[in-house]
Image: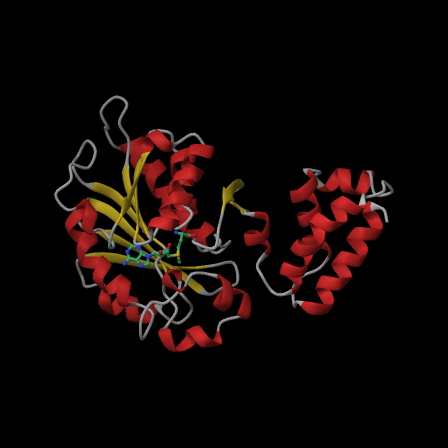
Length: 295
Ligand SMILES: C[S@@+](CC[C@H](N)C(=O)[O-])C[C@H]1O[C@@H](n2cnc3c(N)ncnc32)[C@H](O)[C@@H]1O
């Protein structure tokens, strides 16, 4: 069998067994094992594959056909143009979260151009519920004077996040802390001004009663600690908001990713001390609450 034939038959096999899987997954699995990019797979499509290679590929195809997310099979996922290591200990970074990233970058760039940070200093950020470190590491890569505190309740997730910071060369500006929400930062001296400029939070926000209704690839493979947000999904945000208020500087921002239908409750939780804006994702769903701490 040659590469083209293998891609065709593996793609068809997965399509027939797993909704959403197919040819793209076959290419990704082949690329993961051989190191060949997509262009090479097309260019060298008539090259024969050895029985040994087929034996290596087969169990990976079976895993995908059985519903396991591709990112856990290849061990990586792209986010904001960067490759992140992922494992079953972390949520697979989602495209929706790029909205939070874009807003955080806009806010921090504006702060950097308007505020007088001391030489060598820059904004101080907390990423609560860091998971793979996608938000923290991307911010540190894209804004080279930013200092980030990355907190997660899962030690196993933090191990993955630490590796991602090292892979992207920002381990020196991202601190990883195991703990509950922002509690570990209480009493710490946080950067130049001693306070946070921005808190980014993509905490679990799926209402507990909806967990059994999630798509099987999410429900069966992604960590429940990364998904379950309590009865209405907003338990963690209720606890986070007063903590963020205490740690943010005046004019600081709290960014919280939410699910469709949660913006109204979030606005009622955030009292008049905050200036609140709700942003929609590309599909027109409310996805991000931006709360600015009024001066
Ligand atoms: C939805 S995932 C987000 C991961 C990552 N920030 C992203 O956007 O891809 C939520 C993360 O919050 C963490 N988490 C859950 N409860 C927490 C808590 N009480 N304190 C800190 N982190 C928590 C989970 O372990 C998980 O890694």
